[in-house]
Image 1 (cartoon, rainbow, N blue to C red):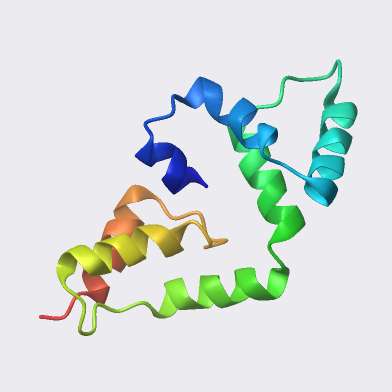
Image 2: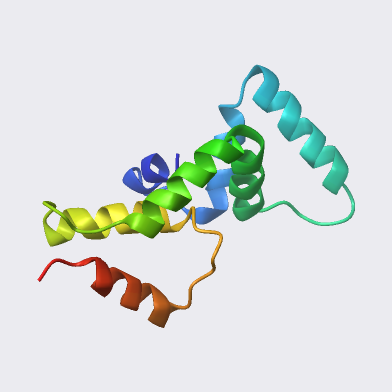
Length: 113
């Protein structure tokens, strides 16, 4: 979803409204519940949507698989660019919130020399 919104250069302030517009069925019922729970307490953000949607619709087993893929990631036969793209795609699944310096070390460790 974020990739598509980036591709159309959708500004951050419109992403939440646009994503919600396309929700259907169970996903819309889920979001209505989130909105109701937040009503009057805080304003929902794009980050809230992404975090909640991921938690609701991305099973823990899949999250574990992606986290393990990140932990085990090596450049292998990929170009550096392909490795960087895969690194960036998978790092969001890590439950270890790595500092920028730690991310750089992990990236460098996975490069083939």
